[in-house]
Amino acid sequence: MLFFGLKHLYLFLMKKRHEQKLIVLAIVLVATFNIPLILLFDSQQSIWGFPAVYFYVFSIWLSSILISYDTVAHELKTPLTSIKASAEILQDDFDEMPAELRNKFMGNIEQEVDRLSRLVNHILDIEKLEHNRAKLILKPTNMLDTIEKVTRNLSQLAKEKNILFEIEDVSSVIALYDEDRIIQVLTNLVSNSIKFSDKPKGKISFSFSQKEDFLEVYIEDNSKGIPENDKNHVFDKFYQSENQNTLKPSGSGLGLAISKQIVQKHGGEIWLEKTNNEGSIFVFSLPFN
Image (cartoon, rainbow, N blue to C red; front, side, top):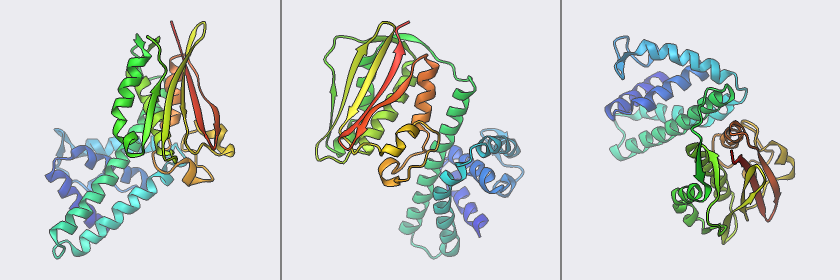
């Protein structure tokens, strides 16, 4: 029954030309359930101009990477269960189902495929970082400008939770770094602060300390904080807190692990400076030269 439901999903995604999402779904199914892509594509199907069999081989290769992470199956379980349930409902009642309800189920599936896509991208990203296959483009850059880009991108999320951003009033803070990658680090840290904010009026502040050879960037919030037992594990891949509602309400579980890899590739360090029920302070350092 799952196969028939996936066939409806396949037709839906191909009709909307969402080829990338279709491939991500197929790869994850191969990696998790060992379902061959040949059951999802006919032998003559072309994707991005390549025979579908190429993607079958690629999915087998990717599955070997995914399987190397003990908890990947757990991370994939929830979206895959949702996709399976929606696909089976569509299979059972597709012809009789009102178009509005059918589109709702299709939308749910598409949303979960997006979630799987982000997880796969994070896995591939950290695999490249861990094996020194990620190249950094280092340039002297003003950290104030970088932080402004991050806060601008996250301003709507912050507004929805009544959170204000505060940036230390300094003229410029120059360090040597790959701006796209440090934006990724800051986005992970600030997104977590927003996610875990539970105060009527939230605040996320940025400050700096210039050492002899390093710039230290401080990100402080007034969120619910991190449980004592979790402090030493926040940068671990796929770490599962004993208190899920406190530490990890959503996400791939790889954001901080990726951030640690990025900062260390720059020759810096990242750490949790302080946390309690009044908030947390994360710090990362970058070399001036």
